[in-house]
Length: 168
Picture 1 (spheres, rainbow, N blue to C red):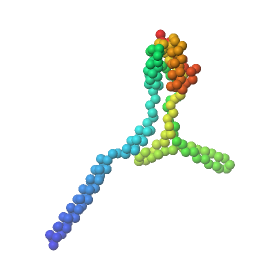
Picture 2: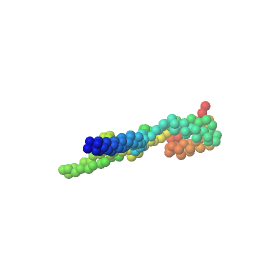
Picture 3: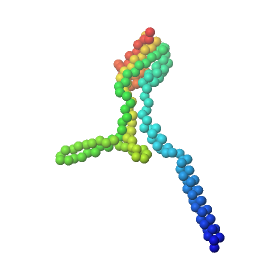
Picture 4: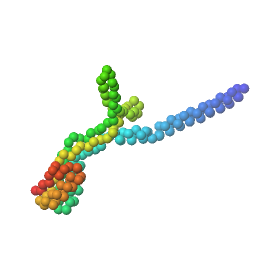
């Protein structure tokens, strides 16, 4: 009878080891699985977009210098404000004693654990308010006109906000 009990106990231990092994394997798979691609994607979306006025000026100067007769070109842009993050808001209106009141509250989403973050609707870039273009070929009225039209097309500025002068 002791042999029978020993065999029974050995069999139960084997089945428990199998279960324990499966549990350990499952835990390892969970640890090795990719960690929340959605969280990483959400974090990337919430980063404010880069806006570099200097980089925009360099890009504009590079393209304008390719204009026939322009020669060397340097550009300075004026802007109002900076990059603005517009967040989603929930408006709640209440009426009490004949008065209507409204309150606004930012819409938030759960980002993991107990952390919450406001929902971004969009980012607004600064508006261009003026441009100065200094070019070798600005002594020619035709070159000035082409440069002015190009800057207006790329920045949305009206031509009276763009100055094109000759480089010394």
